[in-house]
Structure formats: structure tokens, C-alpha cells
Length: 236
Ligand SMILES: [Zn+2]
Image (tube, rainbow, N blue to C red; front, side, top):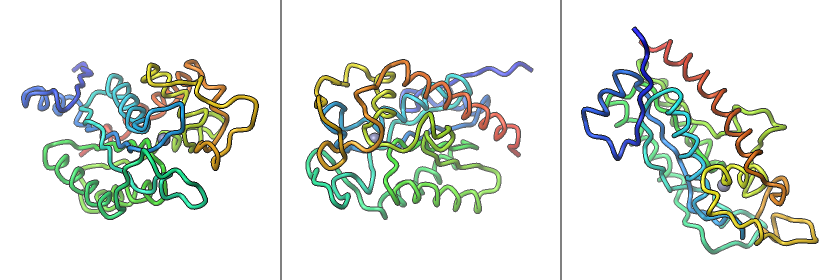
């Protein structure tokens, strides 16, 4: 039998369409975002836009249903020690993140998804650790389902992408998924960019390009699609 790759955005699907996707590829993608200050040149929703874009591209390759991004994150730049960016972030408690993640995982499994991929665009700590802990907890208790929480840089070589905040990596990915929201011209010129002054952590975003973003996205999609192929083979 030839495998068909069918996918869709969950909130736009009717029940028969969801069930057809589950019969073909029982994967739910849960992009996890944040509403967080991302310096002068990027929108506050970058993390969710990035995670959703990567999940849609992954679903197009592998199949599955992509949920709307969860714009709920803890450990934002708003409360980061030693910096002062109190505006343009909406921060939630760590306990609420844990509860929300559990409720999604539980109900996605009950609804018939055998694999849940949680891709978090926000990598504050312990926000990201909480999402991974909940995945581990569910992997222990549900042996016919698999839960995978990751950030995009987790499966990429460091020279291509590491955790960053509105720096070269995130800005380049934003140029792939929502270029109209990026204003590189708002970045300062003629001086070094710093976390304290600019709210940017990582490589200089002034070198961000669509091509670099596409290279990151392609490498991520290749790696993640291969790993999901293995997980699908291992399903009971
Ligand atoms: Zn971000």
C-alpha cells in the first residue's frame, strides 16, 4: 500500500478529515510560542510564528495535524535577571505551563494521536525543561503513544543554530516564515549589540538573511522528518 501524506491545520479540519489524517499518519504537532519582547526588529509573537511555520513544513513532509500555537510561556526576558525589558511580554507561571502541557498531551492521546510533537519556539529555563519533563512523564505512563518535546536547535549542529533571543538565528527564521514582520532597519548601527542594551542574545542579527533562515529550516526538517519516520515505524 502506498503511503499518502495528508496533513492539515487542526482548527480548520472537520472530524472525517482529522480521522483520515490519523489513519494515515497519527501525529499531532503542537507549536509552543510566547508573547515576549523580541527587541526592535521582530514581533512579540516570533517564537510561536517560528514554531508553527516549522511544524506546518514538517507536516507537509511527514503528514499529521498541526495545532494552533500555544502563546503561553514562562521565563521571559521580562523577568530575566540583570536586564530591564518590562514591556511587551505576557508571562505565565511555570505551574500553568506544566498543567497546560499535560492537558494537551492527555487529550491529544485520547483523541487518537499516537505521536505528539511539541516544538517550542521559546527556550527560557525552566520553561523548556518543564515541557520535556511532561513528555517524559507521559512516555512513562502511556506505552502505546509517544511524546516528543524539543526546541528546533536541539537537533541541529551548534554551528548552524544554538538557543538565541532575537539574534541571527531567530531573525533569519522569521525572514522565512513572516518576512513582513521583520524590520532590520530598526537595529542600531555603528556599535555592538548587547543583551542589556538591546534585548538580543546571540549572534548579531544584522547579518540575518532569508537564505540563512532557509538553511536552518531545511536542516531541521530533514533531521526531524527522519526521526519521525523512525518513531512511526516503532508504533504498536
Ligand atoms: Zn524567541
